[in-house]
Length: 314
Ligand SMILES: Nc1nc2c(c(=O)[nH]1)N[C@H]1C(S)=C(S)[C@@H](COP(=O)(O)O)O[C@H]1N2
Ligand SMILES: [Mo]
Image (cartoon, rainbow, N blue to C red; front, side):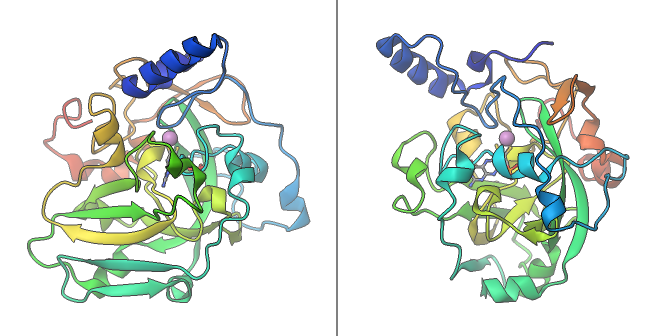
């Protein structure tokens, strides 16, 4: 499959509005791509050796021996609609975003509601973890995240017996996040996990990557990383985590339920309504590779979905 046309990687309602807008301007060749991950055909600039300035000493591949994506690409090719729909502009627009002070308020169906400041979060054990992160329009990166398992916070707040899901919210502050001035999504950005997914060891809250603190474009000061799911599940700049009984309505399900499901497990066998998801393009590497079920983490996570129809629960 060749690169999807920008019209193919956009939730329909946004695409149609955008198309009318562009037709109005006569700008038929506009290259801006919308969608949970966007899908411009441009390749990010070749790796510049930033990680030679501050040497990175962690692993150079993930557990499938896939090479890391360059620090330059990881920090300059981003999806963060609170700043821009253009993946190559997010870094610049987010550069002055203030991430201190910061509080993550944890509550809902828990015995011990608590609020965690940045220092609390940074005090948790930090580990080098090399995950394959991928996006919904079939591009992927291999990123050495630093973080700690979300279960560590869940253990502290103690979900009650009624709690079945975890609901996450990004900061809402249109004066600091200019993308929130436009109604492209219903702000704040909301994501969710089933409680057993949230308790899985691979599910982390990340505060850094490549041995450095997160930059704003990657979701500073704290973002979720769920490596067996499409990129949009990994919500950035989290301020609120609630334990809830019912499946939360996530931003992407609300925007386009036909295209974006709650589970969003990476699955080459379930095409997006408008394109195949069988192959992906690794940023910085030419050609395409076959997409792996659960992004290659099947041994560790498939049991969570035993007996479920993955075509219905996409
Ligand atoms: N708050 C918020 N979180 C978000 C997004 C977003 O627009 N806003 N984009 C998601 C998508 S679609 C992807 S692919 C990843 C991208 O993370 P990265 O830029 O650090 O690679 O962030 C996810 N988390
Ligand atoms: Mo994405």
